[in-house]
Amino acid sequence: MFQISVTRAHQLEFLFSTEEDALNQPESLRCEVGSLIERRPFNLYGVASRDLEAGKVVLAINNICFFMLYGVASRDLEAGKVVFTESPVAVGPKVDSPPLCLGCYAFVDGSSLCTLCGWPVCGPQCQDSPQHATNECPIFKEAGVKFQSVEDFNIPSPQYECIAPLRALLSRESNLARWNAEVTAMEAHNSKRRETDVWGVNQVNTVDFLRKQCKLADR
Ligand SMILES: [Zn+2]
Ligand SMILES: [Zn+2]
Picture (spheres, rainbow, N blue to C red):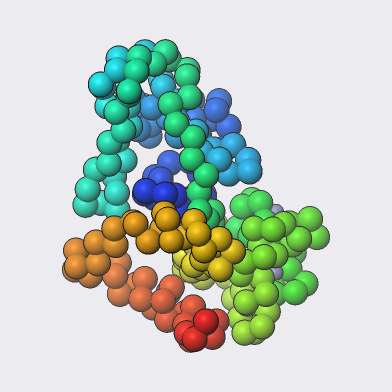
């Protein structure tokens, strides 16, 4: 529940680590008639929670609060059948996340840090996980950007807001073809988002942080 995926068409609101988790969520946390399920290594699955007729809406996703995206069944679907699969462009901590291990997303208490960049990880295995080791780790190390310890590890830490956007941006370098084909087609809705309170927060915690502290303005 503490991951967010930037996918081909949208930011998914709810992710579950197992199919059982997804199906055990209260109805209010599910998409209209389907559940979003994540299975490692981060493929997303939507599963029909009841029988569906062709032509019915099977999926409704709130796209950054302004528009709804809908998926429609092209044939009859039985409850429990997978209705779509999707591979996220990037995976990372959700906005308003408390401090997490950047390898496996477990909660942390700050006692174990990456020996290269100084951000929380569970240990060597999580330090070496590709999600961390090939994304923010070398950038934080190079720029000397250390995790700033917090008093309470149970409350959201704004330090984590830059991680998922940074991983999404770095995906351009690792897979330019997918970036050009899928990410550039996304709608930014900047004119509407600029009017929201979160615009200024994002500018400071993500844009300025990545460009200035992480020294990425010219990359
Ligand atoms: Zn971990
Ligand atoms: Zn690291």
